[in-house]
Image (cartoon, rainbow, N blue to C red):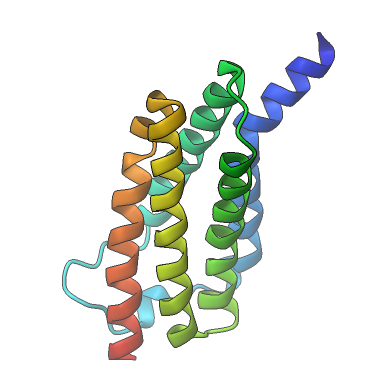
Length: 152
């Protein structure tokens, strides 16, 4: 029983926990307010709010999928790879200032999110629906990343 509780807590909390650590790591390097930004760029305070919501939904959707009892190793791998790609983006963009590279990285992230949603749709639709906000936000992030790379 203790093992299931810890496993479920891991599924639920991992994205938000790792996202919080990355947020702390990059906090001194965030230069978003000082960059030339494309039209429709949101204020910087919106990003931690949106990512917190998305990370919570990621955790809930993976938890629900795992507890459905339909294991799929491909979906598990895509989930963890997508999460890693997501988390590394902030380091590349804010700490290393690799603006052009992050355009390519964001497209890789978008592809991984689309593939993850495809797998969720195929194996467990509630998790698919919980991640639609993630897909929309990454599409918007792709636009912002391209715009910032061009303008700066």
